[in-house]
Image 1: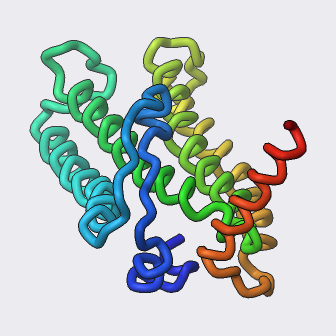
Image 2: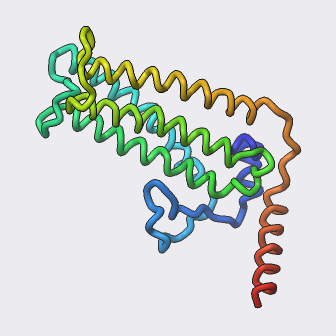
Length: 213
């Protein structure tokens, strides 16, 4: 989203004297009293860091899981408080939520300026991929571990759940790929200046208030 605006310098130049609205999902959507944060190089760096930390720490935790599994200390079916799986998976869930928050903050800030680039449906596809690849897989794995998904020789319940999850993902991601290709493989009009977008929003808001009055 930042690159679509023109990069860090262009974004900071156009967003001077403006602020980020941080009372948005998935962390603080129910906290409208939170103050806005001024847009500075430091705040922009913190937002980027909030997203990058997931890529780094997820890799570290995955390697740790493999090491523990090779030693016989990691079992996805073990959901007790003394098991490593429940703590690692819970920590990954927290990291995912923290990583989504900066993306949502940035989207709320630039969605009007990038509306001509179909940023809203692009962001919707991004969210859909995340839900299907993470939440759907987690739900199917939980059902398989609880025995809700019946075993079918030669597959156990967990193996059949994993197979079902991958088959669904293949079909779903193929459909999403077709939609995403339509959104990205096309020519768009140049984006308007962020200042022009803010002035347009102000004029529309003023007109609406006058009309209601």
